[in-house]
Image (cartoon, rainbow, N blue to C red; front, side, top):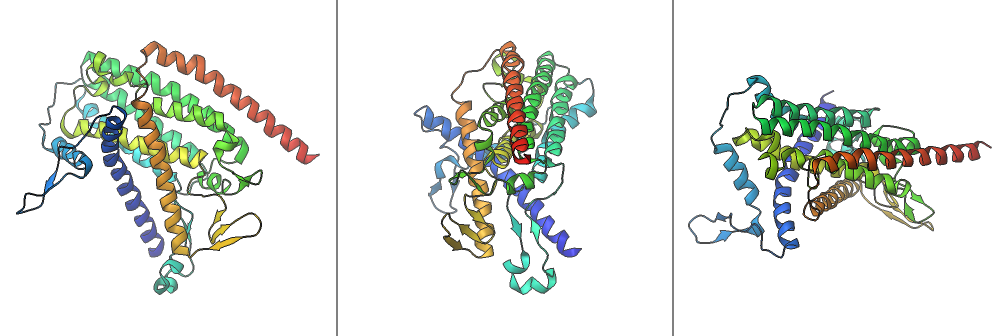
Length: 383
């Protein structure tokens, strides 16, 4: 239907613009947050001059991200001799595209009723409502792991096809590291699947809309606090960020698997890394922080303990849910950058040992305890 197509085109445009904006803004956040932590000024040189005046708009260095993008676009696209020119050209896109696709199954808001939002279009939409989620799939969480796993192929293709020993070592490191930590991520979310009884991300978020013990939000982090720590640690490692940036360790491998890339091809690798910070923030928010939910909030407003209510219009609810989701994602992204500028880099043997000898046993123990508790609860309810 035309109405459905229009709504989902708007969703896709919103998602792409939001992720691109996050990718750009996070480059500035990384610079300024690092400067604050190091007692420095940080990015403050790029500016836009108002025409015919001497007024320079610096805006705390926000234009540095734009300057970086222009630099990548106009730099010479150096093409080295490679083992496979096709694989060399495809690798940046194999890394970049799945990062965007992961967001397709992430719910970024509740239920949208266009007829209530725009009364003049009520007859045209005929009472249709749409969940604010591009692809409402029952197997949403499985899709996340399927798409995120494709980035491993891109990193390894880049390392192998560049005909450079540093790139090859970086690709090998990326493959083994990302596979190791992806296993840990999978085991941590199994506990949530046992609790919520679904792999549908939309259903998971809806089940986190209530409260626990009368005052705690029914978020995944309340049910699975230990799994939340393991998931975020493994996700940062899979994104190859410090202290897990061994696949591109500049002090050892120049730039790792994308050493032989320049101009916008290198820009795609770097941009994908920053967008993945936002994707990790969105997934962590969805799984452990209640998604777009606020405690006591529903599609008509707030219902507080004791019977108190606060009615809100449909437009206000939609905007509140969108803003709440974005703020939660921004907080998680800022925390990832805080980690990046706090901890030193591991050795490569330490990175893999940390995954297989430390995180994996902890994830298995958490899953076992969760399974026992869920089984005992269900047995008690059944009795």
